Length: 194
Image (tube, rainbow, N blue to C red; front, side, top):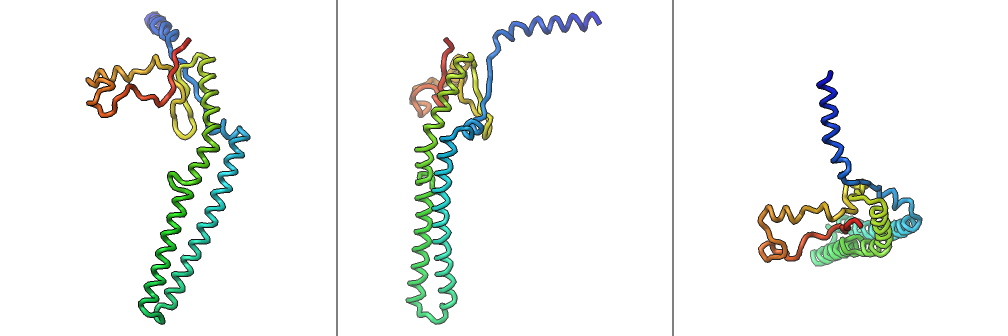
């Protein structure tokens, strides 16, 4: 029993200094925050309405193409080759136009993406600034976002060990050998405590 108590005191004695040096972590749920903001909900409704209208237009174009295909199939035996080929070319053209329309509206750099950036980005920037302020005001070292997977929104630069890892790998930052040039990645804003 005595050995057991002595071990507990020894473990507690060893851990006490590390408690004072521990990093301070916090997390936020950005999805919850966004959903509580009226301007986000308004922007999201606007985006949803745009997407709905474009989707209706796409469905109309698809129905038109399907009708052209079924008409061609039904009349195929009565048509000469030139007419068949022309109608098939018209169908192919309509299908290409449909694909181009979908890309223009919903593609990676489409109108929906650009409108989302225009409407949502300022809201996300405000949230990000608020997270930075909360981190500084509460002397936090890290803030994670639990929405959609865990990602870091704030880090204290004093815990960045990228340079040490590069040194261990024998890579000198900013040289041509790594093909990038420049220094450490700046994905996250890093702040030194005051």
